Length: 402
Image (cartoon, rainbow, N blue to C red; front, side, top):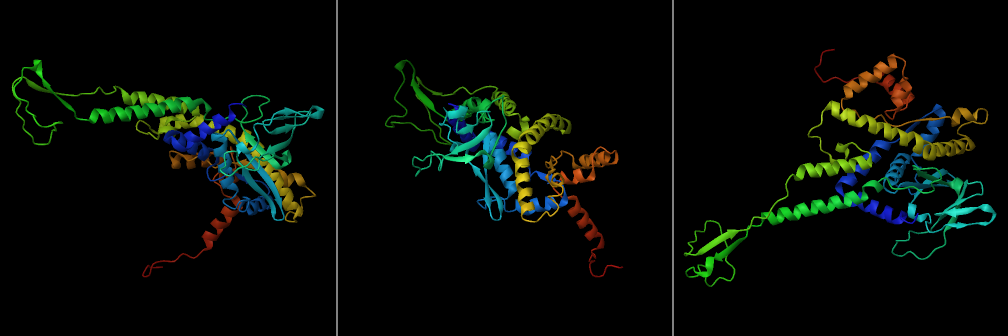
């Protein structure tokens, strides 16, 4: 808890200023969310959710899919994300709360066995009851001392990947590489400075044993060397040029450091460095398979239960109360049951991927509905478009025989 603010600040600095870490954060976010994780459920419920998703952002800057990406980025960089559910007359709206606004300095015992840990209030039985949220960031230019607002836990979604039982606040995923990445930055700076020094062309005019003739550069305080110059030196004079030593085996050492950073971030090396020089289909697939397993763990063990599931229930209950789902009262489970299908990862060889999907459908290992949903489409919409295409008249260029 004590190191939380410092850890978060350093992680944010690297995510915004270090080119490799910036790319790693972007690739983690893209792998977790892509264009958005879509629900597959009762068609009426999905239609109600999709209509709400377009106006989900309380600040009006993006939609529900964009908020998913913002949550995923905060999850990687800050280690946690807070989302406030705001009730409005037009339905629930979502607002992201920066993690530093949940008062990390507030930790104390309360009457009746209750307690607060880093701004999170717990009941005596250990369940979360409230969050203490500051009205403005502590680092805001015009921020003044403000009393935290006590918000019920039912209105706040706290998304983070716990590292152990009883963990209250999240830890940045960049924690294992913060120090190595800082050292790596210094290494690159040192190599750049060394290369600049090595490129400098400097000579030293030496009067050997102080027995040479007249000074060939007499009257010049700083002799210069210009292209095409022929300079005759008197006996006893010599010119020596500086040859600064250059670092050897630089490229392998840099790659070793990048591999270490990639391992600490849980990424295949090419998703950090962008280097595909020695890659082929087999090596890329071998590197991506365990990474995709890790991605699915976060999607189904963190994002679905902590973010997507609660939002779905909130939206469907509001839609039912608004009369958009008239059959909800008779069978709530039908509308509340949902399966979240993340976008299908982009494949190295799309043709092989399509052939594999077709084979899975034919073998009964998956359904066409799931295969279509993984691509971010609704099966009913896709079938309607296909049917429309089959009846749509096709125009032909003039002069084409019928």
